[in-house]
Image 1 (cartoon, rainbow, N blue to C red):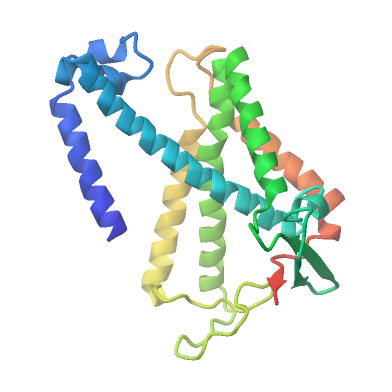
Image 2 (image 1 turned 60 degrees about the vertical axis):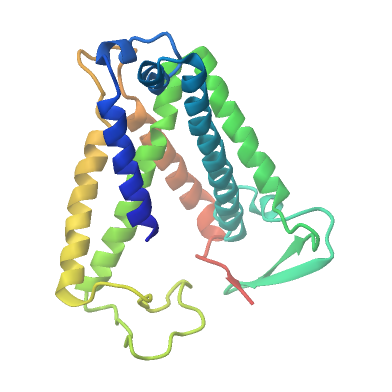
Length: 274
């Protein structure tokens, strides 16, 4: 329902914007910071009206940013709890002031995470996420090209993460070496630990249709990931070159080196809370 409602409203909004857009060249060459502001100005013929409509978009963007920021800091903290990041011991602590402890059990040892009973907010992960975001934003002062290339890493990284997960799922579907549990049987208490059997959720595509679904998804993701690394315009020069392939490769190489040199000694997969 969420996708249906938002998709319908988003499509209707796009149709309305296209019909009221006015002159395309004026919108693209506007002196205003964003093209949609010029479109609002042309449609309303009022600075106040355009400012009001632009403010609505700004409020929505800020609200979305808060949610993204919160989820990013939690993912950062969660991966630190799994010992997947450098300095994971410091980053996995929720606060310095503690009155409650959670015991996270791994195959070899226990990890005590201190939690503030009042807020239970991972302050260190939040502050570090904010610091990294601000530092990345400062790149735009020196070079907008470099900033856009760093931001484009989110696109290639997103599709690469989808491709890895979908590819592994397709591999497990097609390989007889992995036993798929009976979907009618009760779900085990721990289904996401390292070495656990693949357990279907409440909604999945079974059998051959599932294999076709994953196969099509992998083909699509390979194509999109490949073209996401291409320059956006021609001719290509230093200003229009898409360096996201360089940034993506650098992150992948750093991650591989970090894993084989250090992380493989402590990273054992998802940590289970008990």
